[in-house]
Image 1 (tube, rainbow, N blue to C red):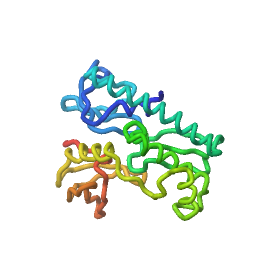
Image 2 (cartoon, rainbow, N blue to C red):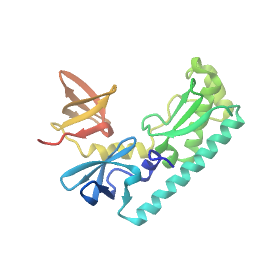
Image 3 (cartoon, rainbow, N blue to C red):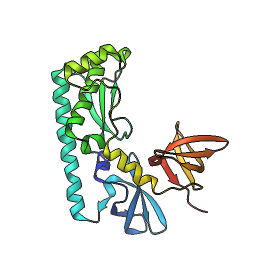
Length: 231
């Protein structure tokens, strides 16, 4: 299991132990889950800690979270079996840290990606449906999109022939937890289009914050925002 996959063991708000140079062992609270590191607050300081360097304070919670890894392995095996059965033996499968998209079909790479959080926490039937949804894309081809050809294949495979799946409970919970950390007037930073930007929250909307940044306004998911530390 690589460092990125270990992200599945943690949620924002978890109390964890970690080690920091010249500080020894510290206890902190996870503020945000990034692709390969968690942003952890300990006292007045913040650290970006690789997931492999984190340990739960509560052993019962650690044991419960380890079940997610078992689930990931089961989903991986299921995806491989379904892909092989439907003629995609030369395609690869792996999970990613996506939150908005449950699955992605990478035609040129011959690869199907599945949201790690969806795989570990989604209803089992919905996870299977997502895998079949992406297999249908692979079989229909890039030009098919979500058109009639794709819908026909999706139905033949037993997948729901819809372009988007409903929001998962896990995604909704992560958004609501992140949302509680912000209010209008907060100075924040966020990464968008490959650049880190800074701005001020003008309005708190149900799913995104309206952020004013250098004369422009951005609608930013709460899970992508970081509070800027006061000087």
